[in-house]
Amino acid sequence: MDPIHVAETAIREAAPAIVTRHRAAGHLTWRLLHQIEDEVVAAVEATRKVNPDILRMMRASPLMGYPKNDERADFGSAGAVAVTFSIIVEAWNHVH
Image (cartoon, rainbow, N blue to C red):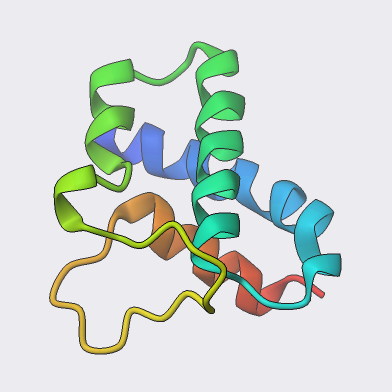
């Protein structure tokens, strides 16, 4: 299996349990999204099954300018969304 697929699969496997722990927050804010991303990445790194450089590429880059405030996370018409953010939002919308 290629390293990108391995990393994406690992992120998809880690995200639901971490999202579930944060559901009581009610709304997915930018601050919470960043926090969940940190937790998901830490969980994936702990497996030691994913190339760290590939995982770093899938994270939200500071250059993308995502806020870190308590407003609801909304990508609106964003042309690009970090892989980790996309998977976390997908899990947030499906985990109850």
